[in-house]
Length: 231
Image (cartoon, rainbow, N blue to C red; front, side, top):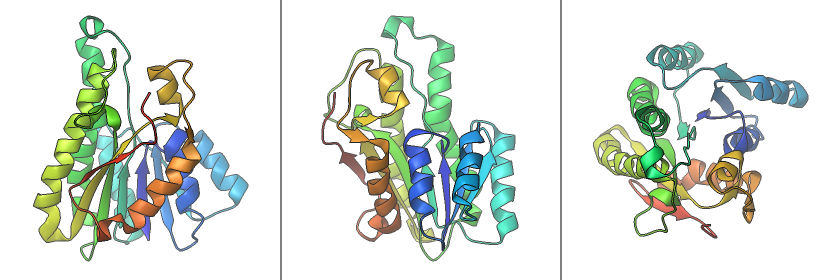
């Protein structure tokens, strides 16, 4: 099975690479702007199940690089996990246009255009796109000061998920979004300094891995809250 994970160098993304690579039948393309930790993982585990790929998914040329890498493997892409994320924690009136564009480029535009780019390579028998959202973008959940750019971008990702599920259904492509709650990651620390989450990245990665492998059998176009607590 061929699996692509963005934002794979740390946090949940890194743990997802670990989880998927436990099965030697999987080949995990681990995409990140910095692949040092991924290269070390491959060396330490002495595994051929992980292919680190240095790329910035916000750049069209880099997305093409990802496309060419997959195409050269001559394998269909079974699972795409859009995990890469960006956050800005600032009062609304202090968020600059640069801040806003940076968050939306990573959280909305990059998944949108990456799916477009990789669409011809997705498994036509049945493939699964898993967008990693947030409870901050889940309708009816609590909202927190300073996260207007981040939360609204995750709401946009949820809407995109619903649209794509219908549009890609004839191609046998399922699309779901997991709205994650509090997980102890670097990003959470930036959003809520000093807060200790009840879940570690490895615990959430176990759930996401299982969902990516089987969730399409039960869900399509769903925004699923995965949250034992929200700060």
